[in-house]
Image (cartoon, rainbow, N blue to C red; front, side, top):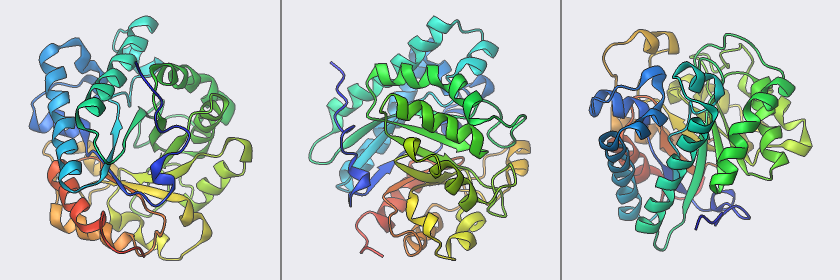
Length: 318
């Protein structure tokens, strides 16, 4: 039985601080030696052995959360489990829906095993229709809603507490996902990625993108995050203390200071310095008073999230 246990009141919308995982795809590829065509982690559900590796990946993080006496957001391995990516990998619509359901079902098993006194929130993960580093085409909100509504519906039917749409590159696509989630009453964490100058890959300033999506007040996300960039790339724009920064409740940063273009060309994983990244997050809490969700993105693994948790989870409020 799948229950939407936290949908009515996500704990991270209050004062509860939660960990989440790190760079799923980079971990599976570089640490576990798994081939992920098109960076599509949902493809592991075609292999029993690769599914086991994915479960071990989650278990490692769940144990960190338990050790640090905090909750956890279980994010499904469905970042690229939408229609265009499924088509490229030869999935039928039925097979793609099944992969989304299998990915969420694994999270329910993990919650049953690990959740104790602290909440384990189940999140359906979604990504952009195109390249997460450089959008080939700019979508309107209507086009985006039409495209993403199917995966939103599938994840909702699978029983998720919320949806996390991460590595959003432009406001139009982000707004469309927000509309699709709002129409099914699914809480949404909407995460933009930024370049080294703190602007979206579309060139729009992050604050302007958040304000643009929020302007559609009937479909506002529950909160925003920043992902797939090093804190050095966006700290300066947060230091200004503008009102839109209060909408940011999550960070999933890269371990590497490299730009998206440099990461795209890299053959070797740049995993940075876990302790240093933890301190970077601690410093971000001083400019993001509502920061409640702490995880990683490309190049990060359990070591980074452990350090981030040690630095942030039980730190005094800003």
